[in-house]
Amino acid sequence: MKAHNFSAGPCILPPEVLRQASEAVINFDGLNLSLLEISHRSKNFVAVVEKTQALIKDLLDVPAGYSVLFVQGGASLEFVMVALNLMKKDGGKAAYTDTGAWAGKAIEEAKRQGEVVVVGSSKDKNYNFIPKGYEVPAGMDYFHCTSNNTIYGTQMKEFPKVDTLMVCDMSSDIMSRKVNVADFDLIYAGAQKNMGPAGATVVIVKDEILGNTGRDIPAYLNYKTHISKESMFNTPPVFSIYVMMLTMQWLKDNGGVEWIEEVNRQKAELIYNEIDRNPLFKGTAEVEDRSTMNACFLLNDESHTETFNEMWKAAGVSGINGHRSVGGYRASMYNALPLESVQVLVDVMKELEKKVG
Image (cartoon, rainbow, N blue to C red; front, top):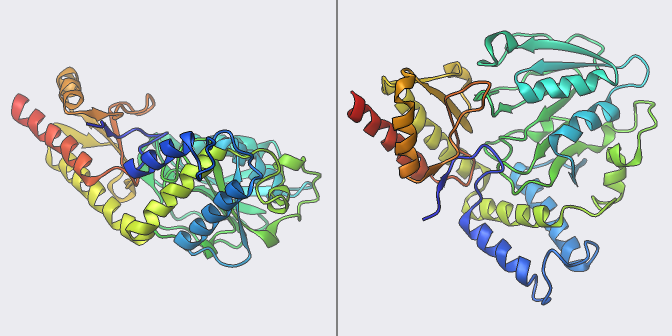
């Protein structure tokens, strides 16, 4: 039996996607060649890129005038590219919220290109809540936020309306819930949570916002380069894009984002209800800001740690150790994790209560 995979990322993928991908590694598209061997410019792989883009546009209802790009370097490179492509060369300013480790890294990279105004931060409470009620000053080139914070288990439930370009890092909750893409000017997301394996980063960008900074941007770091070359400026991450295509097709075939949003709601409700009910556990994030993707929790009595660890491992649960900055446990419940796996973990939590209570 496959482990109940709660890994924070790279994360669980649908079983049927893994089967299809494994077959393509041996013989792709009936070519008697591996997917890993074919030319990225062959008609067979160009068709993969085009289908993946079309699926993303369909699933997220991406409006006309936006490009869907596949680049490499993860969100870490996007921290740089966003600032280079959107912050003016002279007197550039951008507003950021600081809601976790990755938001902090994005802020540091943007500071290399211009002035950064942190309009809301939860750093003083170890990022256990989402800042609200802040104002974005006039004159900003863009506003940047992070929709979900994997380490701390917090998630933005609503997005502010701003009078500048709206940019969001959706790496850990893209495709998990409905969003109105038209409310954003640029969305980026590493694939390795809900979309596929590590290696590709998806960028959804409104074409008209580009080319206005006065900067001489290096070719690879310029979004316009990737638009003009149709994500083929350099050899793309072939395997990652192909598995992304399979995963997006799996999502569409099962009912799309609306379907998975309800499944994810059920998974989150199941585990948070147990965290709140069971006297042995407590959550780390403020209730109103709890992430649907990453449930972070602690044992109230750490003397039970060894027993609990032995129990969940024996049940086939994998990947729930919390990040070192929070401690405890983190159950990451990305799209492909079935409700049954969450039930297994909850049952172990109940059994621990019986055993030590």
